[in-house]
Image (tube, rainbow over all chains, first blue to last red; front, side):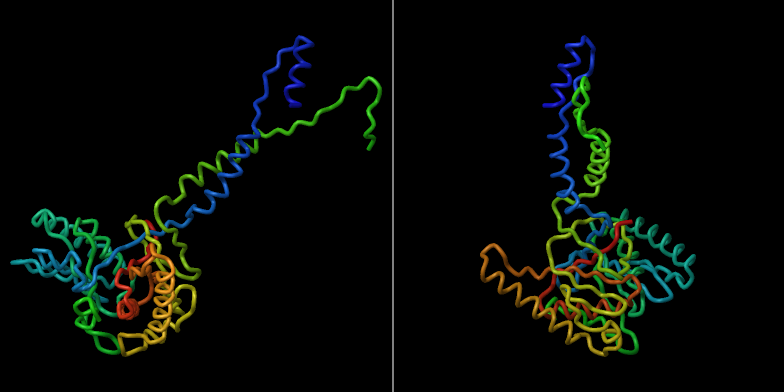
Length: 172
Length: 159
């Protein structure tokens, strides 16, 4: 209101002045939108990583290729491919781990091309392998187009379980 | 300060300049719009948990959260046991975690009884520290399955 009055006064004097926009409705909209968006905004993007379990109808069960990735504290490599034996690559040093994963990715890409319809992979993990390394291998499998991994625990000495103990038949 | 107007002086109408505030709001709005999550549950990393990084971008569905930190196992916000207890256990099933999950399931079942469109679906989100050994995670997942939480999703940070 006051803005318009001021504008008229100036017109009476013969001066040209741009009409001010009434920004209050826009402000009201912003004030409503900002808290709503703040509530549903995520500043640390967390996403979901799906896994399959043995015998629960996971993709690996239906696969024609029994693709297996073996991950131990010292090595990583593929297994379960007909007529082919893959080397288990050393991963003890960080550089060796990076190189081994590059090789595994390349091998997975080759397998994807050879078995285009195959889905799923079994990931056999030694008990003391850090969780982040498991996720890295699961990523490599998924990025190669094999979908979710089925997690299996490799047998190990000490207070750890054997493979068969993990959700046998999906009904532990 | 003399507020009285002197003779011949015009009334001064104070005008608030909103342009700069609008600028701030516009920038803030654009920033928030690009970090907003639509069509999925929002999961916040538990304090003290360093989640592993992954290329996965899949959204979450609304589910209870089980957290495995370096020190504690937390089921839906309540501490269940120490992670070292899980690590040192010779058994797959971890009783304190099982008890907490049974309580969680009973709560879900009670809610399902009251509401027709709510039912227990066995979904569980696991937030685990990236450094924990796999066998700890395996015991946690096994215990979860014994209680009926078969649909387990791992929480990871997007790369």
